Length: 391
Image (cartoon, rainbow, N blue to C red):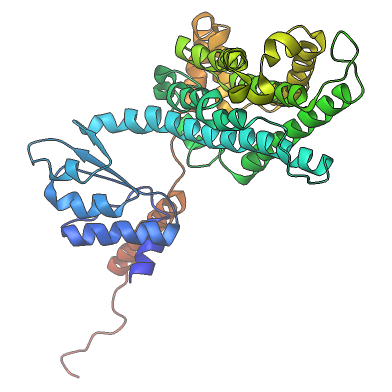
């Protein structure tokens, strides 16, 4: 009867299983996980909850008088049951959005960087010559773009913890998967494709026949490769700055420090003997730095790469805002302080009674009324015929 049990359980607001063994707890958890395909969470405080905690996608153990067995088998540990609200509503909301944005940004920056190599190969008839120095490609994911992504995955907060507790409806962004669906993933991949095309095409158009040095010579491949790489570093770091909603001094240090690190590396690497620096020997001091076209190209390409994303988020906030966009605007303009009635109204909307199990409750009420009517009618109806003593 497990499938009938599951069909009944999923339409109820809550289900209580009484007098079940530890194995049955795990089996019920597995039934819900496999039958619905949803992410399940199990929370327990004793050894009899270990099987259930291990079977669920996420296990939460409570450390208490019943020992530490549940805590040792869990993914997260709390000291009291009431802390589950903050674990889910605050940290669950933050972590979902951080990880989703971090993974999407990984797609974006690596597509933007990798496709420029492919475009140059096609432009040079697949000669096998790379437009970037080997050290540039080695440092791209290791140093120059790694720390901003880490700061995004650790410190990002769209709203504060107090607002998350006041507006628990924000937690539904995770179960609804608003930030990691295929629409969002393909959008970031398309943004990376657009960025790579803008970087490559603009650099080729600007440097192909344009005088680069004071004597009128055009730029060589080393100068154009360093310029393209400078555009990539600046564009992707400005992109992650636009993505972040909450800035700390650590995030500013990581984002803008990564851009500064690139120019310091280019300067110091160019100071090495030609045996080590090869075609990048003094390239920033003698070739790129004195050329105004180098700095103008970086500025033009960075603006062109990030302008569509800026237009998209501006349009979304104005005409189709999400829940956290509205709350951010309310907090920014201090409407929660000036208009307390509006703030209380918005908070009450986020705490409306759930409609889960509404049909089941209505059906149960109808069955109760039918039962009462049947019992009342049975007491009123007398037997039509009673056997007489003579018969």
